[in-house]
Length: 161
Image 1 (cartoon, rainbow, N blue to C red):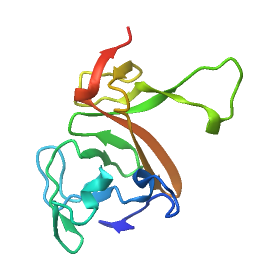
Image 2: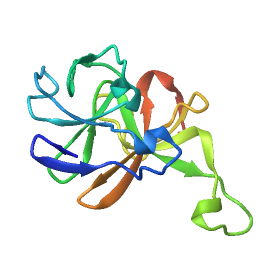
Image 3: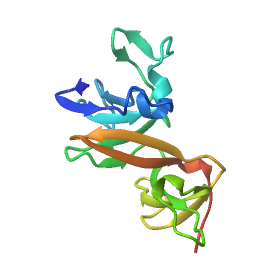
Image 4: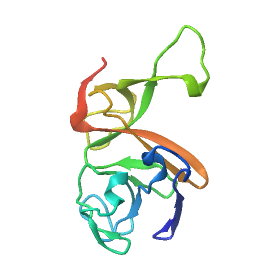
């Protein structure tokens, strides 16, 4: 899809996980102190399902500035978290034998911070969060699939010291 002159592709139409196949990309029409007009944002996929409470008309939605807005996408496709969200990597459960990536499991209650801008959490910290609070975001930028896990700041229970 092309939004505000930027082409972004969502994941495969045949994907079973709606987080991966549904649109999560939007452009800011009217900004505020944190996002400006024309910014590209990643949002929760349920914000765009009709009948969405945010739907105004056609492809125009009025999504309140809050936790359903995850990050601003910059010109290089990098993300900057907003609305008390933390961008993280999942922590792989270690095993005695090496496993291929598709067989590896990750913890459901911890993550390593990639970007905690606007929160108390810093890059590289291992945070513990409520079980299954990690929300995987999948988007394709310049033909490259990118994945990041988002954790809401109020879901963090502790930090590994």
